[in-house]
Every structure is written in C-alpha cells, then in structure tokens.
Image 1 (cartoon, helix red, strand yellow):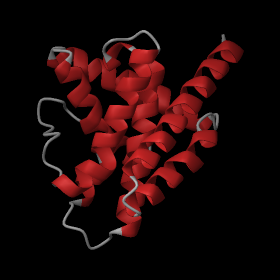
Image 2 (image 1 turned 90 degrees about the vertical axis):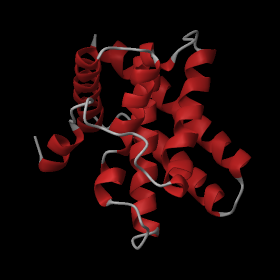
Image 3 (image 1 turned 120 degrees about the vertical axis):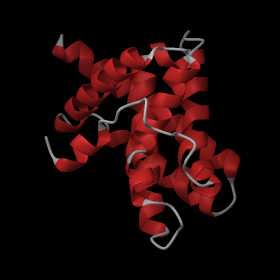
Length: 170
C-alpha cells in the first residue's frame, strides 16, 4: 500500500467533512454528492450509502475533481490534506447521514478503499474520467447545469463499467 493509499484510510470519528472551504466544497464535493445520490435514487436506492457502485462513482468523481482543483488552484487556501481526503470526507458524510455507527463507517470505508484500489488496478474507471474533466471545465465557465450533466454521465459510465467488470470477475 502506498503512502497516499494509506493516507486515504482515515478514522471517521476524527474526520471533519465540513472543514473544506466553501468554494472548494462547491466545486469538488457538493456536485459529486448530488449526482451520486440522484443516480443511486434512479437505480432504486433511496439512500446513497447502500449502492456500492454509486459510492465508488462518488469516490472517483471527488478524487478527480480534487486533483483538478489542486492542479488549477495551487495557491488556493485549501489544505492539501483536505483535498487528498475529500473523497473519504464525502463518504463519511453519506454514512453519517445514514446514521451508521462509527465502527460500521470504518468498515464501509475500508471496503470502498479495497474496491476502489481493485478498480484502478484493473483500469475499470478510465472511461468516465473525460466526463469529469469536461465537468470541471463547465464549472470553470460558470455552467453548473452542464457540469452536473457531465458528472451524471461520468457516474453512469462508472457504474456500468463496475457492473460489467463484476460480471466478468464472478
């Protein structure tokens, strides 16, 4: 496990998902949460926390948006650790909203981390990344609706790729 992978595993009792500044949150976490929850709901999951592929899509969107934020705004007043842990913070918010106890949150985070690492090792998520990059450009241009549409396309492609991969593996 690399240092960055180790850094992504956090104790949910000590993570403050609201510590990110408002601008970074509105570009990195908020839209991805909104899209992942909407996509999960359309898939028959009224709460996001019980839809593993949608949660993995959330992790991918937040991770990529955080990378883009760090790349485009290196001087921003966002601690690098906050961006690095943004996906974990978003997941913690989802699990807290579902009122999961801290030990269950820790188990869910570990399962997501393991699954996410496997998906990267197998290059399952690459099809969705261009849509996240397009969403970023739309956010930069003040086109929020178009950005959300691109994130939705990303989430749908991520979920489809995960489900196709799962059928091949099992």
